[in-house]
Length: 114
Ligand code: 5GP
Ligand code: ZN
Image (tube, rainbow, N blue to C red):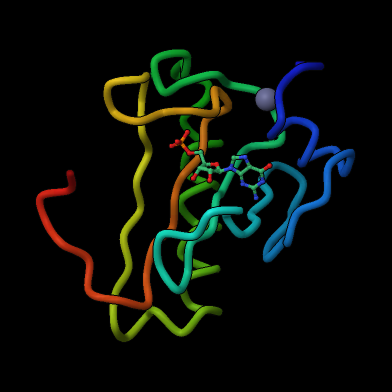
């Protein structure tokens, strides 16, 4: 999608602090970090929201989760713990309409989230 900021980041058209890349998934640090580790894991292919994922998207969603766990290990979070979050639509706080996982860690995270 030509007007999608995360498509542009995945294509290298907008700079980002990448921490993981493979053929299907890229991960980069959030520009407004909410924790010592705050990384966004996105598919290279544009999917707007979780509601737009299809059964065929299942393996890709799985690869995003595996990439997130790999980044968590690299960030030293495998022992202390971390959180993966996907916000879906405005009421949940989604502001970028290209599906993404937030990887949060490095501090104690409260529950329930706000
Ligand atoms: P959402 O609110 O959709 O769940 O998450 C979008 C996230 O993308 C926010 O945490 C926001 O800080 C981050 N973000 C928005 N624009 C950019 C950008 O240009 N670069 C990076 N690295 N993060 C961004
Ligand atoms: Zn996109």
